[in-house]
Image 1: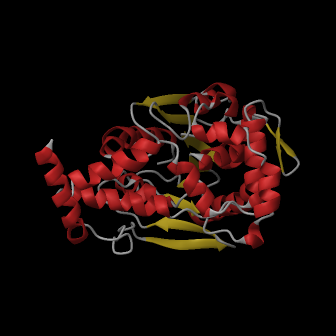
Image 2: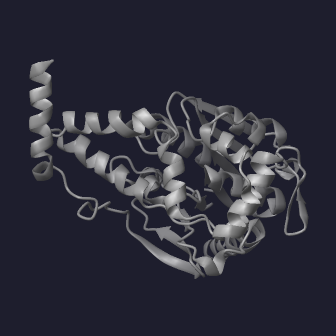
Image 3: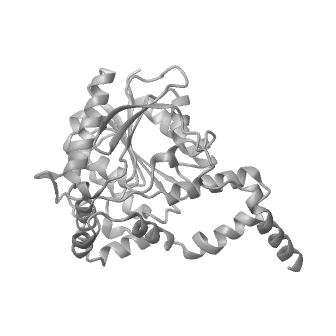
Length: 346
């Protein structure tokens, strides 16, 4: 024990010379172009890496928390780069950084405004009547709502750890949301500030996200690959944009507190959101060890839709591990790519 303590202390002293700061780390984002923008929202189109195998383009709707970089965190663990190497034409919606000007924007603005405009742009640019849509986490919820309201524009739908059935979600996030006075919070603060969001996620696993995480970091300080991956993820975690107040209000009330979405009683832009309108092929991806979105919260979408072609995949990993890990590269992405190839125009 004494030897281990001395070694750990030595590693801590050497850490400043072995690890880059968050500002110094280069995420090596896969080359892309901003092909459409509206307000703070940008639509990114990633440059192809191989000859495209399918004509139908894929639009990824990232979550509203943190940045899309987790999908492109490292060339060897990049969700985007893997799909490009499989010949998929990849677009991604970057929600940007909302300001207080955006505090009154809600589901209608995001689903029937930003998402619809981005998808229409891709449809026009690719000369395709329909597109494949993938939503991750809260982006999965937006994608489910969008597909229910605009099914004629979606050829294939993939939902990765989506927030769907708030009543079945047993995570800390859900328990906080269910007992929150969201009206008072939004009326007081406007947008949800990054500091609040960062605090909420930091207490989900206080031991693992606090003491244990940094203990392992210092123990592995001489492992260059481990240190680089650690800092990349830390940079992603620390970069949390605000969430527009009205969007946050409706999110907490309709999805978590009143559980309207899964019961087809949610209204967006004056229109009822019925998950039964989802008739296109559906792939639902959930992680057994997900501490942000319970698998039981995501899986009900598989049974709520009218799709005849639907697949539910359950993986032995976590929320981030499903999209940014070696396991993701070896198991999740090959299955996702094959699923897309089989259901897209060639």
